[in-house]
Image (cartoon, rainbow, N blue to C red; front, side, top):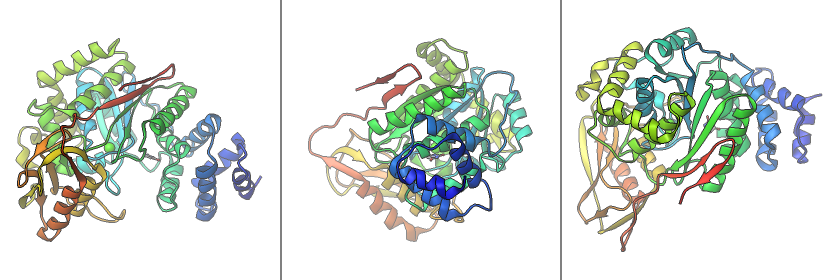
Length: 441
Ligand code: URA
Ligand code: CA
């Protein structure tokens, strides 16, 4: 069997055999295989699709191109993954809360690319923090502290690194089987038994409709179940940035504000929804209501914040940031963004707000760009709020003032105003488990 036959089959819309799929995954991890042949097959898959059996087969073959961890963490290893958003710092809020409740979390995270932020970049804004740790070390930290947030090592799913980079430049990112196999191969290889997926819907997300998100979620749950893992997917809101802070150190600050009890709102609420499922999959709670009570207790008594401090210190970082936010990188200037009109906010395009933060230096345009951890913006208004002309809708945190005008224009352009009152945004749209899909309206 050669690779051209595999491309030919999918071009004609046929189903690929497990052997053909395995050849593809191994080729993606091999230096000898050609980018153009891999890209041709990616496009054939994007156009002609793959069924549940093919997608599960691709996921397992991809996972097996690298190490498959079986982490001994002294409990059920759980992980969570978001399909990517803006102002989406749930990881830094919920991972310490779940660990404070007795959960064992090895959170494998990525860097930001384009308008979405990446947890690894946010963590690196903490002085001294190490996020690229050898496998034995992060497993030991998860066992001792209860949680560890690390970057994907090069030994894990090399096939995905190559395919993801190719998809990014061949317009093949938005394929449900390719997204599902990319995410789930990394989760299976990371060794999590319980996997909670945060599938974002809306203007700032890869998937723009709830129906597409449900199809993606069902596929990912099915893949996990076929490999004996417990998987729950929640479809959550990305019609505006989740938290108010967008930018690396700024998002760490907001997570610390939430864990200190100074801030609540949608970021805390979505973190609790995801954390509840992590505690249930950890067999530490029987249902969402009791899981929520456990998480809220750890929030209120300060042990979630103490757990974040402990994790930062275990990873070489300065844990004092949890008590003294001025130890985080600070931008030189703050500039208000003033509304040019009166009205009720009906939408805040999350992708555009992400691009505003990116234009200040918070994100990369290419993989080689260096990010500025201090810059970004804080939104003061959300969907449902009323604003007056001249009122401050956001504050920019700026190091290079020549970027400020572009960022301010992007922020104002992201906001849609309407004449009549608008309801605040719905946060949870659906929950997908192996037995059922429940939608919320
Ligand atoms: N996140 C991933 O890791 N892979 C995708 O394909 C999409 C989002
Ligand atoms: Ca994220």
